[in-house]
Image (cartoon, rainbow over all chains, first blue to last red; front, side, top):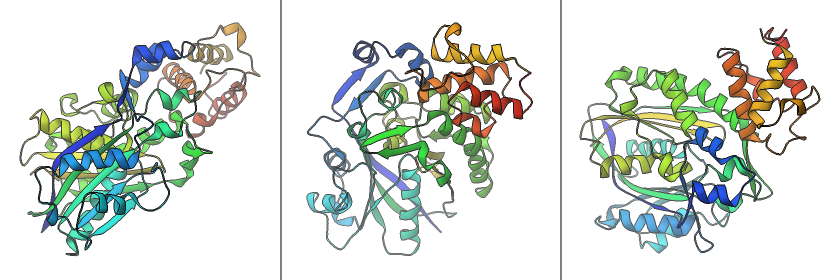
Amino acid sequence: MSGLSISNLASKLGSIKITHAQLKKKYPKWDMDNVKKKTGINRLYIASDKEDVFSLSLNACKKTLKNFNKKKIDCIIVVTQTAKNKLPSVSCMLQNELNLKTKIIALDIGLGCSGFVYALATINSFFLSNIASTALLVCSETYSKFLNKKNRTCRTVFSDAAAACIIKKVNTMNNINFTFLSDGSGANDLIEINKNIEMKGSNIFNFTTKHIPILFNQILKKNKLKKEDIDHYVFHQASKLVIESLSEILKLNKKKIYINYDKIGNTLSSSIPIVLENLKKEKKIKKDQKVMLIGFGVGLSAAATIINWS
Amino acid sequence: MISYKDVFSCVSKGLKVNIKKITINSSSKDFEQWDSLGHLDIMLNLDKILKGKALKITNISEAYSVKEIVKILKSKKLLK
């Protein structure tokens, strides 16, 4: 049987730090205290003019590859929807800049907050078909480049960031399982129009609270596990309201839910790998623990998996 | 079941405006703060007084006017 391991987690946040107090000062008409009550976000990190998806990704990748033999990498996947240029793919640009071998699979996946789990599933299928065994997975977004000044909904929630990690094929007792959901009827709920990203928060909130519990139970069933068997629930770090609502609906042990949205905001596709990086750095995650990953957002799209940490 | 006054109250609290400014004709076009976050506040207020029934109504998250909210709540027999 084939599974996967996640290691060498690293990230790069946008270099401009914006505190709650600074936002309050900058936008006096916005009721920031009320916004904070819902989002739980204290700080945001925004990319500078010099930073973009590629540069943030490159920075995160260099940290990931610091102590890793990059000759082993035979696949690079970048999850992004906000690259500076529509073409070429960021993955090909990174292959060259990082001096990775040319005999490599390089592709971008155009997804947002569910993208990390989708990319894991893609890599896993490459592993199962023996066309790759070691992948560099990168998630990177710079929504701030696509937000107008009046966009309170997005400007108070989203941070720019990139996260990178190494995914390796490992022999396991069981194959890794995934569940997916895609509902394009909600395409307009988070959409970029004329270089401005618009979000209908209440629609996405409804989508999340309606569909994620279903996905949650499906992935448990596929793995023949109960929710008590899971050591860490890693949700996409959407906001306080979303995570707390999911926790309440699913009646989860809050101690098993790691949050970082309060410190760094909603980092979109990077949010799940950044949580894993935090868990690892803080030594909260141990070998053989069961970790549930659930991503959801733009599309609308969602995906879940359970990994045995190794 | 809730009343029109309750709906107006949920909208005014959600948008942080005086209830006197809310009428049956009020919509997101009248208030800058009736954006996605403001709307979420209105939905959460309605959900609270309707004891968890409001957020279960799929199309209410698209209702960006008092008239639309009223119409949806009436169709679900949640409004007097």
